[in-house]
Each structure stands twice: as C-alpha cells, then as structure tokens.
Image (cartoon, rainbow, N blue to C red):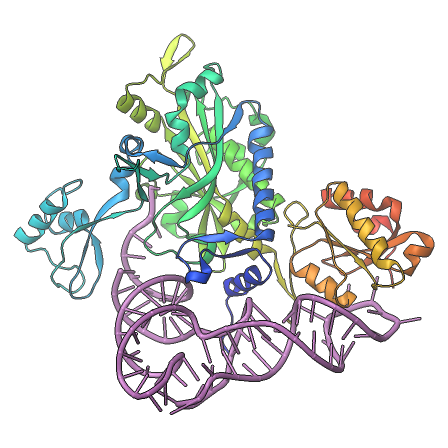
Length: 507
RNA sequence: GCAUCUGUAGUCUAGUGGUAGGACUGCAGCUUCCCAAGCUGCAAACCCGGGUUCGAAUCCCGGCAGUUGCACCA
C-alpha cells in the first residue's frame, strides 16, 4: 500500500466538489492552466476581499487600479523583463541536459557572453570547443526560451506585445497620472489585482506552479530619506513575525527566528518600516485565513535568488507537504523601475519633497492568490482516519458559511427550512440548503467543503420555534430560538462568541 | 525541455485482441431518519490521432495531460 500524497487528496476533493479543475479538460487539458469552479471562486473572492480590506481600504493612502493585461514590447524592454526573461539555452545532444548558453560559456572560458545574439553564442561554443558539463557530449544550437507570452496586435501584426509577467508594470508606466491623482504627495500606494502570465518550462504541483495566476500587488512609493517614518508603524511595532536571515541560511537552519517587527528593524533584519509594515500585515492576514503562524516565515533571499529589479527580497514561504514554497514575494524595488521607464519614455518621474526633486523608492508585496488558496486547503484539511475528511476553514474563508437542513422532507419541515435558508441569504450569509439523503450524509457533505455551521429544522422547530445548530469541528449541537439564528450565526462567524455560549450541548 | 512511470463513469478502480464490470458519489423514491453504513430504480467511462488486424479500450507509433527525478523558476 502506497501512502497517498496530501496534494493528491486535495486535488481529488477539488475536482469532485467544484473548487478547481484543469483548463480545457475535455480537449486533453493544457499544462499550467486551471479553472476555478463555484467553491474555488467563492474562496478566491474572499481572499481578494480580505486583502483589499487590509491593504487598500484600511489605508487612506492606497488606491486600487485595474490595468491592461496585454502590453506593448516597449514596456518590457524598459523594465528589463525582455532581457532577463529571454534566456538563451543550449541542450546536450547526448544526455539532453539543458544549460544557459551564457553561463556554460563563462564557466568554460573567460568570455562574457551575456546578452549576445544566438549565432555568436553558437560560434563561441564551436570555436572554444565547449562541451556538455555532465557528459562531455556535443551541444546543440542555442535557442531562446522566453518566459513571456508573445502576441501580435493589429490585423497585420504590426506591434509586438506580451502578456504581463507581473501586474506591477501597469503602475510604473502610469506613475505620472497616478502621482497626479495622489496630488504628488508621498507616500502613497497603488494596488492591483489580476492575472499575470509566465510561460513556465514545466508547470507542476497543481496550483503552485502555473502559467496564469492571480496576483495581488501594491507598489508603495516613498521618499527613501523617510523610509522609517511609516504612518502606521506604531500599530505594527509589536507584531511577531517569523524570519529566516541570510546568516541562518548559511549555517543551516531548522526553525525560523520569531521576533517582533521592532526587534527586526533594530537588528537590521528588516530593511525599513515600509517592508516591515507589509510583513506584519501579511502575517496577520494569513492567520485570519486559517494558516497557523508556525508554518510560514519570511526568508531573506540570497542575492542571486532575487529578481533583477530587487535590492532585497523577503519572501514569505510556507511549509507545505511538497516542501518549502514561496507564497508571497516582498521586494525592495528601490527606484529601479521608475528610473528605467522615465529614461526610456522621456517622462519625468520626479516628485518634489521638501523642495528637492526625488524619484520615489518602492516597496512591493506581491501575493499569489492561487498559492495562498492552496496553502489554506492544505492547512485546513482534516482526516479522521475513517475516510471522513473535511476542511477546517474559518468562516472568513469558508466558501459557504452556513447550511440549513430539514430533518426530513415531509410534514412541512422542508418548507420551514427553506424559508430559513432564504432569510439567512437575505441577511448576507452564504447559505446552503440541502434536503437530499439522510441527515448524517448531509452533515458529511457540508463538512467536506468546510461549511462551519449546520442548522437543522426538526419537529420542535414547528412546535416551539427552535432549531439546532451544529459545529463542524466538534460535531456538537446547541438549540436556539429561530429568531436568534441570524445573530448567533453572525457572532459565531465573526469569532465574537464561542459556540457553547449560546446553549447547552445536546445529548 | 530530457528521462521515467501512468491515463477506464463525477471519484477510486477490475478487466480480456471480439466495444466493459464493481465500489463510492449523484439523481428519483421508500424507510417518523440527528452524524456518510438499509431497500428499489435511474444516470454515467475505456485521453486524442494514426498504424497493425477481419476486429483494439487492450499491441505499436505520435500527440496531450499527470507523477517522480534532472534542468529551469526574473
């Protein structure tokens, strides 16, 4: 008997219960693309809503935009993506290993081959008799591997364009107008949520490595001279975060360091208050989403791991069943992008601060919706060993928040229950009504998709006007008057009251 | 991308060169029924294309998709 992987169990539930499925499945599918079903979409919306509340709506200085997904080549020429996305690769004819052409050349000779055209790379490899690093076999011709999806705009194919590999570029290329909207006063942030595309060589691991993904990003613009004057610093100063420093990585670490934001800044483990703010809020957000604090941390990435635009990356990694996985990227982009676009376009991106002209610096939290969703699924997945499984979602993320069942279909119970369900929906709850099958099976069906509370209408409901409420995680029940139902569900969902506060457990 | 193994109803599977069974799920109903376990009935599948063959879902080739390993991952 082989142990079934946790990821496989989660995929199975996702397919069967309408969370996520492969794109174009009836035509054989297409690697790296997924479609969110009814429950997956509800969860995705809840993740985005929570992010928007925390990072955008709660902050007067942050506004959200919706930019174009397809952008002309000039944007990526300036941003540096064209250059760093197009790696020339060579393949060994014998063992089929792939190498980066410029790297294999610089390893084997003193020639700097970065950025050279393919023909020259081929010539250098031939002239210097460079062989495969593994088996000494002959190398095939170099070819470009482009991680951006290319498109042609116009019926005659006049303009080359690319699907954006990150949402951020929309914000940088609109900086002038956005700064104008913010009345040219720093600091301010521009947020965006939407699809980005990367033509990954080998998509793998379900939602974790995909070619189209939803990002939630903010570009926070600030004066680098005031990088430790964040408006909300006092509110986050004492929040605990987990961190893995570069020093720890060199020594080999087993457990992340738990420190307060304040300590992190004092010990220079966090570069500035803007990065600190995002790290604190991300920690809080994941906890609200049902991901325990002890399974994720911020890792200060090594220089060679950081993106081309970053002066320092503090990625949030989670401990998943398949290993450590980057869920959120926090990049210190400095003035890299604004300078690049200002120069390439001839637009001035300077802002006057204290009578001096500066180009703002940028701190960027980039959160992957799919990766966060998968992490929630994995961390909330419960298995009692008898083949019963359920998701222990908090109400904040549960795709459906309450289920209403009649104990039986007859004697008016069904009608009573259905009206109750409608009332809950009118009150704003994501309610689910089910009459099919036995009551126990309906509880199981609700548990499997993580509905936190089940309300059952029985004969006492008709006689005495009371219903039972069942807690998913303990399977315990209480009986409450029907008129209290909305308030009780509301307080339970908000986490304002404990289940047992509303009545004695039945049986 | 290379190598490897794999691809049968919604899910998990059995199976033979002569077009498929099961379990669970789903649906309809019975059972006065509060934790998926009773009964009846219904629905539902051989990844796609080509080849070999009288005949292939079963053999071969190619594609697509997935697993694992390598490589890649701004």
